[in-house]
Length: 77
Image 1 (cartoon, rainbow, N blue to C red):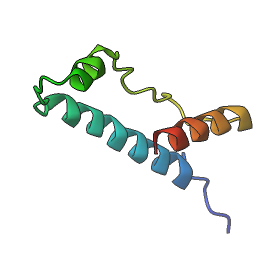
Image 2: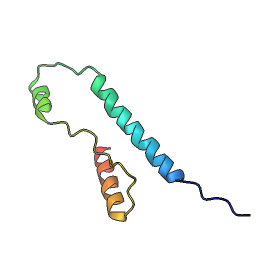
Image 3: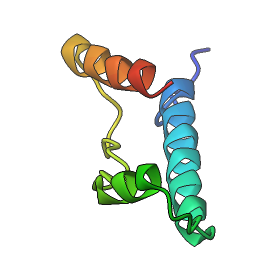
Image 4: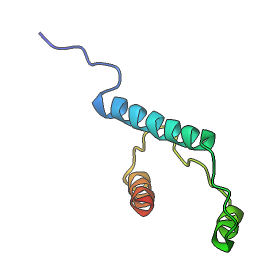
């Protein structure tokens, strides 16, 4: 007796859960109050545009896309 192939899989599920958690984190950061210091460093930081989440909609399938995603993740850590 053969098992039916399930739609999606563990990696796909894990990708979706992780992606949603990252998006939730960005949303919660937007709701948090921001500091209102008067230092020159704070003023310079406020001038840097926020790139927002750069999360692909679909799980990367090729090696190049996966390596680019890993490079960006490592740079943020």
